Length: 305
Image 1 (cartoon, helix red, strand yellow):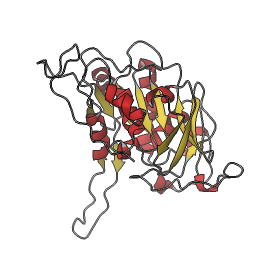
Image 2 (tube, one colour; image 1 turned 120 degrees about the vertical axis):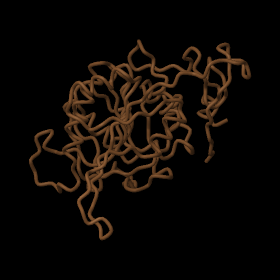
Image 3 (cartoon, one colour; image 1 turned 90 degrees about the vertical axis):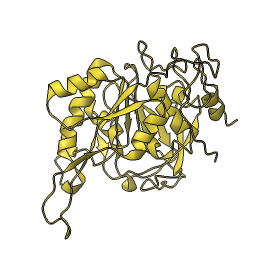
Image 4 (cartoon, rainbow, N blue to C red; image 1 turned 180 degrees about the vertical axis):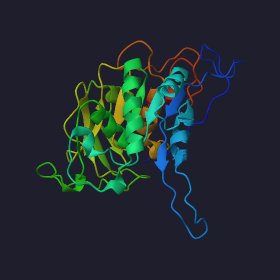
């Protein structure tokens, strides 16, 4: 597998000629919904510390490498704060984490509450609905994809290991494979996801989840499955750019070209057309080939050249 390390280009003209002096390209501001981390008491710290709102360093690194500027949001129920932050941004990313509470779709069966995070549910449901109303680009990973589906009226399966695989296949390992590919993913042609990954019909993905999309939400399209049948990606075709993937491309963007392509597509979400993104955005500079008008390097990676 080819390993690549994108670096930020600093000098290129608007015509695409490297080396010509120009102002640095403006980085799109990407709001990141925070994870909620409860701090446990220890012998060294016997008092109960306040929970922490955090962003994984790999998540920030992926956005920075793709040309964006990550900005972590606070977990809040204040509509004015959410509105103000959304007015500042060019896109929103919702990461993985705890399980979405099954009560959100009317399932009152007993469930391990230690796996849930109601404070994130409250905030992220409100955030996702408002992002879609404003038609801001939205990229959701793992739990984020699941929450997106539930926010649109869908449901989840809370026990992936208990799902019967497709006939003639075995179930792939879907838990705790973050730094390497875990299984192949079949991508539907003609979808936003397919365009993001350069038209590839079969890609690789890591995996770390025990829940997955079940009933698809209203206006949501299932656009990819693992080869064992587990749902792996959804999108909202009516939105400008709304994509959810079940895997964690923040861990593998340096190793898997199609994962880096997902982050790059978020940065280049076209402002006026639904489910479109562009590889040419005025004076924006490709991080791989130092050209401002077309991303030759990314296209070459997706062709495995």
